[in-house]
Length: 178
Image 1 (spheres, rainbow, N blue to C red):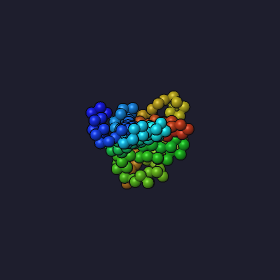
Image 2: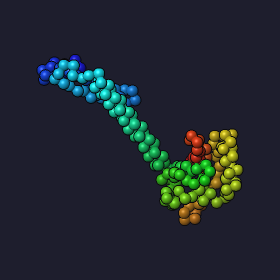
Image 3: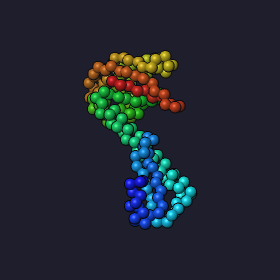
Image 4: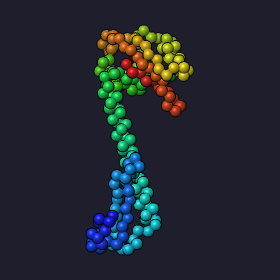
């Protein structure tokens, strides 16, 4: 504040309050308030200003987290690897990236009504359940296997599947990277 002190006095300001804005605990900005009356900012007003600073800092941190989340999603979306997320119990696809959609020829909406069994004709519900037992029991973190996928046009192509079971609180999803 020292460099501006004389200028603020010259302009008739006699009170000053500053509220820092932080991103990831680093001060990145501030809100500066001036008043012509000495002692203008009361303790209650200062507490309110501190809350405003905390709220803005929280918003800045939230915006950064959202930016990073979006960047990660965009990276996964643009991956040439096929990436699938599907429910542990119903096996319905919850997420399929663009690389998979383009290779398979299905829309995202179509895929949400499908399961891996629709793409892997050599598997039955029973054989797939048997394959995933080590993941479900926590005996293995990942299973790798080779199979074939069937595209929307009926053509087949070979794939190497890297399958994990990801536990998220009270539910679990499978993550398959092809």
